[in-house]
Length: 242
Image (tube, rainbow, N blue to C red; front, side, top):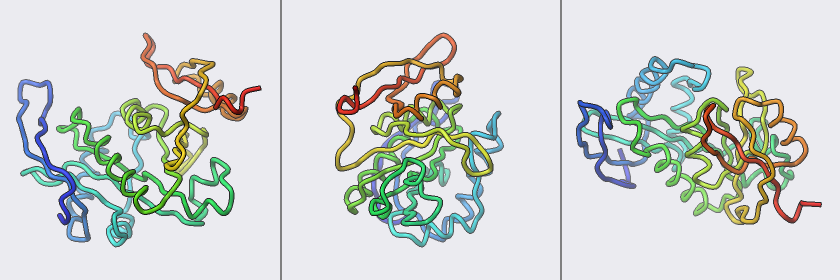
């Protein structure tokens, strides 16, 4: 690991009888971490009940990002790598989420993706995903990028909570890679939305209604707990209201 970014204490097996206090460090990763990151990805996908929620990647994918400055952050304990976050700079490539949210052509070079984030099952509940993505958003802003985007499964409540906490909002709902339905979330890092009017609260499983609202220019503003799971609140910027 290079360039220590953050360090502190976390809990292994949090809220369990086997809970244990551990020291962690976050820093940038490089090609020497390939085996660890692939092994961690395999552990994570093996432990998921619904494997559709998590998109796996090849070793070549990780190697490509290791070679890009500031792209890959890892979280380490004495047990090795326990989490990672990847930042992707799509430029004018066809896989840019800027196309999904209809950014202008001259804005495409200002798009950065929160591409992949993952945490070992034994270390969930420590806000590591939120912390790593927060560091990456700060890095993106310091590099002059204006549009932060990511895609999230509508089923993935923890990831949605983390992304909403950083001020990203749902701008589209689309079939993406491997024909998986995903929210496309976005934040303007220079001019974040501040004045939004909530109009609807929609059950998270009601994707048809959400799709219709998004097509009418509404934005997913946040999450609210409910008996059936959770709701997504939708509204518009006040300047767009009739």
